[in-house]
Length: 440
Image (cartoon, rainbow, N blue to C red):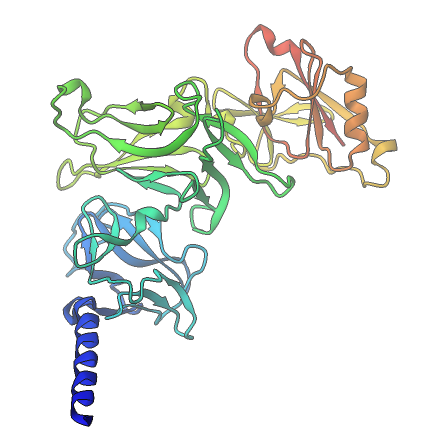
């Protein structure tokens, strides 16, 4: 009786092992890549012009990222042209690793980044979930595949500040883009583009200031196109050939899905723009960059579209930090620095005045006046009212965090703010109705 039981146990163990082997990553597909030496690009995970590699802008702080572009070439002294790399996705964003960090893709199907001290900096959490392969697709989507070719994990589900062609946002999932902190720091910055699927909100853009507890809305993308509930937003680029004819080729913009489906067209280049990306810049602007190899010695990158310049309703003056911490902007230029003594020439040294202490604010608050300017909040918030200007002033004086109040004479509306930043010059006859009072 013992032999049949042993035989049955052997069969069960053999079957179980066979099932595990059937869904494991083949040894030929596994790898370990150490972040060291001159070359930091993974040949195993590349698809021109996309590549997975480590990059750094600060000594011994590396980010594992997908780059788009050829980058600086390493060769035998021959002058080979190269393009700049735009980083389109980061694994360990804001959590850099050092030299000798290891990226490994093992038999269990987990892609994991471990720092030299053993700290797990990032992972896909796909161990024992049927992964058999890793691929970087032609559209820049890094995917882990099961035996049927289905996606177990994909980088398109985890956008940072960039959307590639065909990549989207959706409420309840990956619902926002978040800017970099600066050109050299890929940590999450103060700007975001968000879809929440609630009501007729357009696609709001927010600025998170250290002076405000809540993000401030500074723009609504495509609000004129879409004022309904939004379920999905996708950055799209039409192919260079179309059954609908040349009028529809190479168009790029946002495809919006919800109560109705529309395409918000931004621009139509005259060349193949399939390799385009939408990026929320560290300055809060939306940019579309297109990679198109025009010739061996020519830069393949074009800035195809810039939202706060291409849209006549949104000049660069709408960018909260266009003029740094303080200044007046007109026609996309910083033109003046407001002071208690009047307007002076703007420079990067222009700063808002220091606020009175909270204990003395109500009694000693003074204000200086600026005519014909708007605050970034004015676009989406007219303020409280109707209210007299003296009552508006009292509200700001009683709030020790209030840095200024903006008053609409024609509407008798009062808008208080803790944040100044860039003030926009109001153009036209209505400018006399807009007035700001800066506390000092």
